Image (cartoon, rainbow, N blue to C red; front, side, top):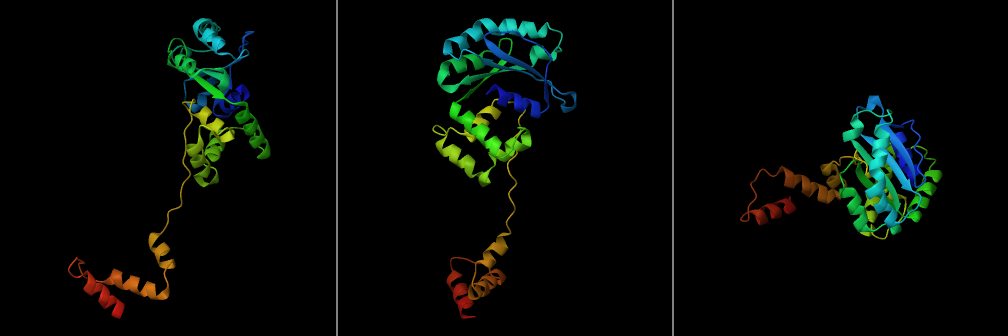
Length: 235
């Protein structure tokens, strides 16, 4: 899962900081924004090798602060890291409790923290989807296209069945909701000319009546509506 997070960061204006962090307990990757994107936020992507609820709490209570100090004192990041850094903790959904997720995300000491939880079925389906469509880069355009796929029916299906759905779509939505830089762009809908839609659905007789209704220079009221309709039908 952490490879998906790295792909998204690599593809959306962030680069990996050249800093080796030796932790037996976790994979850790530090990302900083490219100068040209005019952002300031750093990201620390983390995947614990021991995926247990107890280890997640241990990471919060004991490991996070030394990691924060180690990165800042490395000389590889600037002062923005102190006040603008988010840890993205990748965790298997069924191995961490909801209470622990809330505990981690509500803790504002050192890093801001977001937990990206996932099921193996979701991850496998995303990899399959990317392979079938030959997707290599999960940039903003690609992710928006995924979210808007199938004329919006994919989103409606997720909305109606989000608790049971475990596929690429549910995973990509969970990930982007944890990334503050992601901007959703709804698919533009073509404007419909309502007059033409109505006219094209009418028979020739109905079209004649429709035109007369529109051309009637009369203020319709409850008192005269029957009279007006009868006059048009007799015309």
